[in-house]
Length: 501
Image 1: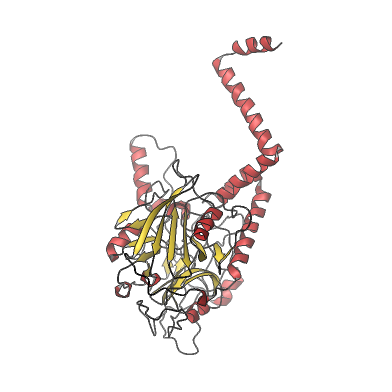
Image 2: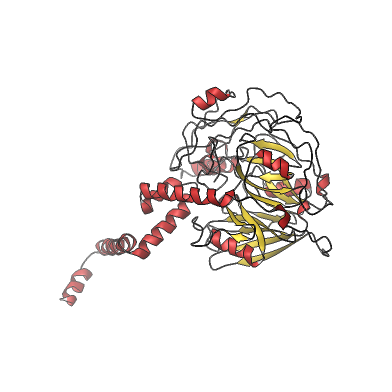
């Protein structure tokens, strides 16, 4: 009987045999994936990985639309819970007597499925948030480092990223540098996910309002999440953290003040990427007491001595970004200009304006290999700031009606409005966030709470609030993205939040 079947199979043409083998393999693999517990685990793991990319909607292929939405909500809830606990600011006791041979130390790290870099920064006051040098587009980290004379740097907060080809100029959340609020899409009383440093060099991670940041004396900050270590306690106690494998950028601080930046390469044959739990464990090995993530995915990168020392997963190499944490020999001499000041609209870019993408399309067209037409230009209608009442009525958030600057006084609130959000993201990720910076004063005094008394960062006593740009909406809503990764919405307000690593 068996030999008869084998002879019959050998009489098939090569095409029939190939199709039969494919059919059998498909039957066996689908049976494993959908009819066994290990198969279910594999499908959910793949779905988690896809959810944190720019193609979240495709996760239904592995688990179905209903389960995908449920997984997104679970990830939102976990991130929200982990961000609530406030930090013990006094837990960091800076070791000012330690001899420092160099400002930073960079070393290779690796795991079973990933490779990356770890950078130790021995004086946290040497870290500054730097933003692009001109309006209209973000800036690559190597360019920022060369322009400012920095020793090293990593990517910072998230941004609105249409088509995965955004220009890096539309941040999401908050950006602070030198004690000045350069950008925020939340009112001063609305909490948002923050990764930043106080004047004294204490790393602050978690959900804080702008008002709280000013009281804590935070001078450098961007927005991203999730938090993985709080006050010495690991927050991922079971599973891998729920975000699959991807390129990662993360930051943590030891009790003696040492800051550790970790960048993991991913989405490559040589390095698939790391889970949140694996990065958390790396920090725990160094006795880190507070840690969290910065923007990841194709945005993840580290620059040292004017050279890119990691391998970004973007097909176009380094991406243009809205913010970075850079390390300086003399941070007090660094001047960071507010490039969003005076703007009333922000164009996040996209396929129709991405230089490398357009060049690639032109080359394919010249070779006759262009499978699809070049994307049409995204309409950029002028968006005027709405009043609070009109914005709330429309289901969005409010933005101030004036761009006039005002100086803060003892009764001023840090902000007066929230961004216009015409396509707020949903758990199924069907809309693009359109964050709008709001006028927000900077602290009138340092309110230093750390244990170090020799801060070298500039301190501002008064500052001019930045005006209110609003991000230009896309004609067709796309998944909400922050840089290269898409994150579930964890905000409790009506404004957009961000995509981990």
